[in-house]
Structures are given as C-alpha cells and as structure tokens.
Length: 195
Image 1 (spheres, rainbow, N blue to C red):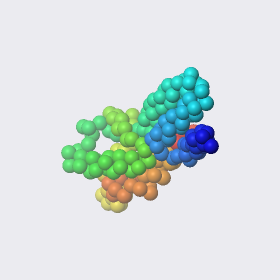
Image 2: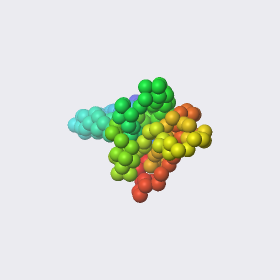
Image 3: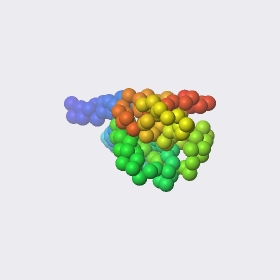
Image 4: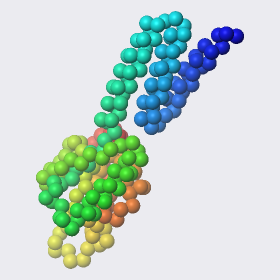
C-alpha cells in the first residue's frame, strides 16, 4: 500500500507520452515534452537510478527541448517575397500594411510567422519563387496599359502567388482582403514542401 504513489507516477509516463503524440500545436508540444522528461526523470529517481535520472533531466529534457524549440521557431516561417519599398506607392502603403497585418494574423493562427523578403524587380521576385527561395510573392499586378477597361480582378492592388498548396488553401479560405487576388502555381516538387 505504501508503494501506491509509484504506480501513480509511472502511470503519468504513458499518459504524458500520449498527450505529446496527439498535440498539434508545436509550442504546446514543447511544454508536454518537458513534462514527459520530468516524469521520466522522477520515475528513474524513484527506482533508485539517480544517475539515469540526472542524465534524463539534463540531456533528454533540457537539451532536447532547447534544440526542438530552435527547430520549431526556424521552420515555421512563411517567406513572402515583396518588391523593395521604393516600388510601393505612397498612397498604396496603407493597403499594403493592412494586407501584411491580415497575413500575419492568419498565419499566426497556424503557428507560423511571416517573413518579408525584399527583391528589386518582378523578374527577381518570380525567379526566387521558382528557385524555392520563398514560399509566395506579393506584388502589384502588371497590366497592359492599352487596356482601357479593367475587370474587377484587374483593379485589385496586389497579386499574391504561392507555390505551396497548403498556404494557398489557408489564404483562400481565411484571407478576406479585397486588396489582393490569389494564385497557386505548381512548381516541380512543390507538393513536398508543406510548412
């Protein structure tokens, strides 16, 4: 009867492991990984393996969480190619900032951060997208000046193009800004790069 606390502590190990497996939020998974490591170290200490408990606490918990946090933070980035500041007209700057704020909010819900990557011209922007340096582009659409009548889509301030299907689906369903139109382009092996 006096050893019943050992069963309780030991039962926490598979429970916390199951919680870790089922977690979809990477930041919550970090916390649960820490709990799992602490429970494992406690189990080792209770069974008299102090050296294994110390190793688990230092290497299996602290070091693993630190490396995992760095990996999560660096991998959940949506790199958006934009033209340098000089290419944005002063009267469009407010629309552009609102669009970027909307994108940050949308991708924040998916635990991603938005990183703007400036390029000097549209050719460099398109080449970066094809070379997979960036995940998407956002620029003013280029229209033939001879067309006197523009359709509603052509009157939009910006055109956003992405090569990642999942990012396109997120933006298509959640972005309600009329300032941009969306396009998905299928590049070779683009389906393999879901961030």
